[in-house]
Each structure stands twice: as structure tokens, then as C-alpha cells.
Amino acid sequence: MNMIFRWNSIGISAVVLIFGISGAASASEYVFRDLMGNTLPANRCKVQTEAESAAVDAYNIDKHAKIFCESQGYGWHVSEKKDTGKLVCEECGGADKGKYQCHVEDVVVSCKRLKPGSVGLFPGKG
Image (cartoon, rainbow, N blue to C red; front, side):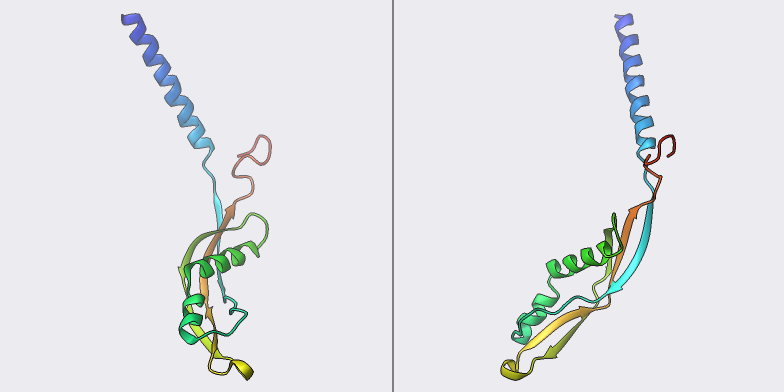
């Protein structure tokens, strides 16, 4: 009985040691960059309430935040949205008089990417 307990404690210690080492090895460092940008207005003119709701829709803001970060190059991702910006609406002309196109200005997004060499990209390093 004592021998079984000894082997179990050695096995548990080995598992804890392996997970402890792998946890330390998987720690990654990131490079962060804050960006400010404007979303694009919809293609068609809409009634003002519809245009405003479409412009400030969470999907629209998320889509443009992703585009802002990806425009920085390969590997950049959205870390967080810091400011959703301000709504700007412009009246359409011509046949669509009385309808509006809206967009959001000054959206602030924090982007991140892995710091080169922090995850073992180079043999023997990191």
C-alpha cells in the first residue's frame, strides 16, 4: 500500500512539473498599437433613424475595427475597442432628398500581434 502511494505521488509530481514547464514556455509577448479610423457610410441613402442605427450597429463597428487592425499587416488582430467614436450623418441629394447616409468617426481600436521570437519562431530561442 505504501509503495502504491509513493508511485502515485511521483506520477502526480511529474505531471505538475511537465504542465508547469509547458505553461512557462507558452507565455507569449505581444506588440500593441492604438489606431483611430472612420467607418464607411452605407451604399444607399436611408431614413435618418435607419441610417443612424446601421452606422452604430455593433457588427458594423466590429467589422471596421478588424479592417483597421488587418491594414497594419500580417498577424495584427483586435485587442479591444477603446472608443466607439461619434456619429456623423449627411443628407443625400437628388432623388434621395430627405434621406441620409451615416458613418462613425474617430473609432479608437487597440490592435495586437505576437512579438517576433516570443513563441519559438527561431530554433533555440524563446
